[in-house]
Length: 118
Length: 114
Image (cartoon, rainbow over the protein chains, first blue to last red):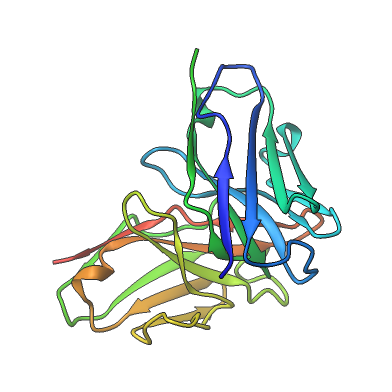
């Protein structure tokens, strides 16, 4: 059974870089049928797709976040990562990682709350 | 890009049917070849759960009370035979195309079982 687990700091200072990692277990991260995605949800608000990466390293990003986002893949560790630069309070959210197929997230991590505050 | 448009709330009594709409544009929901519309259910404090994918397909384990459809630029989720546990937030999503492929979510609909 595929499982995804987000990890990273729960508190980031304004203007700094938010960094999160998603660890995949129960399946291969190199299957070319799937993409690995990040999605966030500000407290009390809706879901926002951040971006995704294929097993070959091809990336797709939300146009509104593209200038600040980098998603990378480490197949040896079965992990993929998110970096979001120049964060503000508006970036405070629960961040989810997921496995995508045809733009659909079939499997989700439990989510991790990241608060941007000094 | 703008989020897909969903009504903020919907409601129904146990046993009734409720339909939630999701309106997009020709660049996403109604895009050429794009049948990649999905629906997710989210209970408070939980991760979203996939209920419908590729417009009208149900993942294993999702009751057949949940069904999806699409007409032009509007997708719909219908929940038949409402049950108390169906009370949750529901989000639609769609592949959005063009030169910058990405995924769009709707703003979400809070479904209340009266």
